[in-house]
Length: 500
Image 1 (tube, helix red, strand yellow):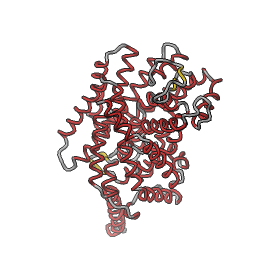
Image 2 (image 1 turned 45 degrees about the vertical axis):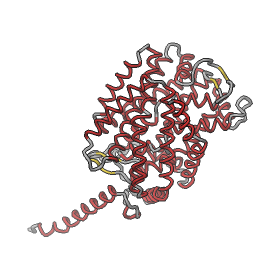
Image 3 (image 1 turned 45 degrees about the horizontal axis):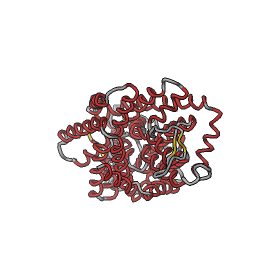
């Protein structure tokens, strides 16, 4: 079974996908004139756009939900494996993928807002929705929804749960089955509360966990301040094969850097589209900019923090696939969270193991919340116009069951399943957003024109000739109707007045 999954994962994660993800990010960066850099200040400002309190979630809550999905064990274990198989230069290519991926995240999240739908007092949307409404390809949307539901509901959650369980077992000796039961109970309390509760938990936990992780990184950097220039020199020289030790690893550095960056920040994979659609904003491009910023936080801040902790303390080994170790500074220690634990322990003895175990718990737990929301959203898409109560309960039970199984199962199989799932979704989503490039550019141009005119951007798909944006069309018509009634009321007012 594991061998078969590894082969499938290898096929999906070929050099073709690496080139595709990099190429798409570069393409979107060029055609938007590097929106992810030009609008950096605007991204931060839009984070605190409150939106409509009576429906949806705020931009900040949607940002935190997306970041909850992005910041997971890929930020700890994934970075370690990138260095192990691609050398220190892989870190540089993770940075490049994050910068280019910001444009991909902008495009996919903007499209998610354009084609979202209203479900009671919340909004839903994502890749299947904009495929059906934007490309008029329902069969493709249904196929993607099935893949996403299977991936986030079954294949991927086990990686996060397993890493939490192993971390607490190594640190506290806690039995993995007990950790699994605790995770199931905590997640059940949150996900049964719906998207509002998920968003409420995310906007409190995510900023706290990211800040704590960065603070510890600074402590390690300060303790090894004299090594900082050499560390950055090693990263840059290794990235281009200029380092004598890692000269033959430029291909591996690019492949592993891009692969783990995509696994971590999921820009282009479509994961951020579901939380993006949940936000209440006046213009789709607003949430696109917010989600581009979340890619920076995930990779340029959290992933970089892990890499710097490992490299500055020298707690790593480099073993190209199928070869002997080039560097073996911590022999016998498997690439993963234990590298970060060793790094922190080298500076703060007695603190490293517990700190990393707690960090993993918060990173992975919030990711699991996001995974459930995504799988529920795609289930809603598949079962529209049907009573979904029974299906939702079934999904919850299946999802929580996979959390427990993942807690006690073999990690290598789970990683292979996760890689296969993310790789499959990346291919599908990248194709879809490339086909919808023209629409995304129309929306972005409209946003820019309104900003230059000094007015608050408001989206009108009818004016732009964008079809399928049903929610926004209704909103525009509703606004026009209210405006007309207001004008008529003012015109009628003098007739009802009495002059003395």
